[in-house]
Image (cartoon, rainbow, N blue to C red):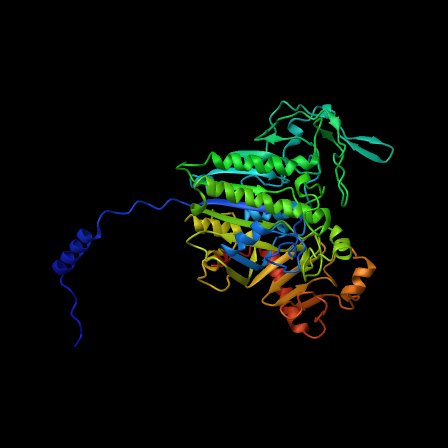
Length: 511
């Protein structure tokens, strides 16, 4: 017998009864705090939770992985520093705007009106802070004295003299102009000015030319010439940043306002200068010791969250801006430690080792402990995902390449992305779709590995104009399948052209 519809008065009775039984309306749930920890030049194979053969203890990152989600197929937008940071903060692939890093005293990479995650969260009532390596440019010309130019001796660039700038003046167009209420850091650890900057002011005027102290035990200081604060020590940078982050988190205790902390580390990027307490603490040399110290900084931040009653309400994300520096080749020979893990390539490369990075997510009550995902994910996705976390719409004209990965983080979907573009410099692009990786060049390298390493790994010369790899069967990218599957190359080349030309890849913009 068909069910009769309820009469209007009957429907009203049941509606009133439901309202009476529902009790008081619950208070709106507090938005979560958000912490993004961003290592510098840390390899996919450096963490014990990604590489069981790692010679470096990473107990705090291993714990973070066990308490949340470990992503096995996550990627920075670029194989170098500035572009990856730009893409993470804006949700827009760097190659739509630029490819290279910001060099010493370079201008901001942000176009007027370009929104960052910090802008989005500040509009949602968050207190925002960036503590660490900015490397996205400032308007240094605003404080440069008229007529000041870099000095040279013969063909040697000596950089700007200390008196080339008015160090008492505010520096425009830095982090506080792009969504952050607070900044503290040294901008770039191996670039001038070698001093501390808080918000938009230099704390200690640089008065002497740069001289590395201490000199690194592995690699070189890689220090660009220019002004330095007297007594500046390279090995005090990470401890100072860590202490400042801990103090800032202590200030958030009991606050009603949620916070966003973006902490881009200066480690383990060169200069490789672990603090005395970490020297000799690993079986992977000074770099291993520096990674161990990086892990300790993660531990200090997590401990500060717990000590101040913030951990349960805080989403924590950890990743790295690109793969390990070229010193990693010699590390394989000397210490049998593979910073790139089983992957091919290093920093700067379009090979997987240049941009596939660790990616960990902990969010109590929302992300299952001990979860592991092999789904494709980009750091460029952080913008749309955080927007979903806080219930905000992505602004028009923002985050053109950002996918909402929240369903993946929560275990509600096994994948969100079908494709992702890889790039460092303008001459080579890669496109990932499923297990296929297509390169529009014969290979993905930027610099040639040592001959002994090529022989050890079995890397032969490329005899094809493009490259195609099945990453599930061949994560080390040794077997170019372009000649065997020309139809796949043709299809992926067309998709790559489309994604580059149309100015966006985010699914919301396809509607």
